[in-house]
Length: 463
Image (cartoon, rainbow, N blue to C red; front, side):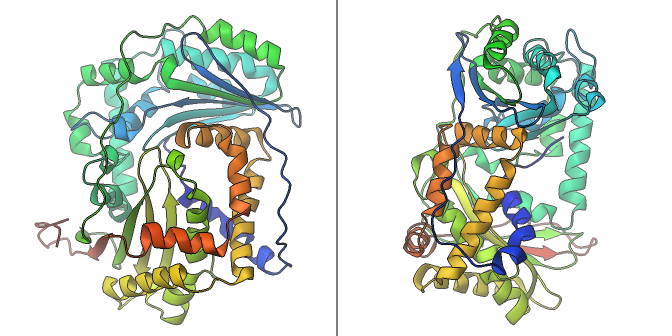
């Protein structure tokens, strides 16, 4: 049930718009976008409630965001936040296992969940006359979840199989799973969200119970409701179903680790028995999302590098030099220090060093050379179009508010970010590239195919 809701996945979807945007005149004037009109309150037990009343369609989105992610996994127990995402779909005192499917899919709706570095969220969309039931169900699994040996072992097996499929069986799964561990030295972001089979096998039922008691509490959660409802009725239902849940007296553990500024470039080698071709990834540290006004410019920079076949990395590595078959760039902002990352999967007969040289050349070029007005306008239009398309649904509006609230620290960022995106200039792109990327120290991950008979010794050693 895990979905990685990161800017990389957002950027990947933007390719759908590339041809249409490029083939029409680009408008430089700033659009006047109506802000999301949201209502916000906090219950006495600490539960934050954000709601958007919108009667455009007879549907409603219900999302529960918990301020806990893989950065909060216990030491030596990576994957706990992810494991708990799965456990939350099991039985409660008053619900059978998988009953969320019956409460949503059986009435024409849907439900799912995702785990990230900073958050775990659970989201549903149903016809609006089922809102009351969904609010009761979310409160029920917050307060009355059955954390028992049977549920623990069955879901641990599911998560381990997910690891085998997404990391071990995927030819480039080990590459992307290695980015966080190799990019951070102190911060717990170095623990991959999906965890590891060894850590999951070492876990006990008591570990899981302790994790639930520590982080799944009303004062560590944000409820977001968007769509067709009456605000007064919603407030009454929220008070009825969530208001009685007690706020624990113990404090919520907070991550206090500070990732140091890199003092030198580092290079690692990761090998794979399933990858048919080598690859390379390079990362740089960027500031926390709530502490920087440069998020929009970094997103635009990543788009200029990798958005579509007209992007700089595609044109250089795939089209002109033909050393790579796939490229990407992403400005991954987080509650703590984020990552600006680029990668290339090689074409047959080419080595990671060739791609690394070209990736760095394009980074320098973007940081120092003029950016054409139409190129900048194209990428900004693509990013803005994707955001506006997402917000055509109640679910999309709720996601925008959740990202703004939990990652950027303020729901109002869901509105101000669109203004900031439209105002990004070529000078802004140059400034952030020079400040955070060009000239700053990087981590390079060389990803090499390995025959199954070869020794695995020395994997991941720093050079």
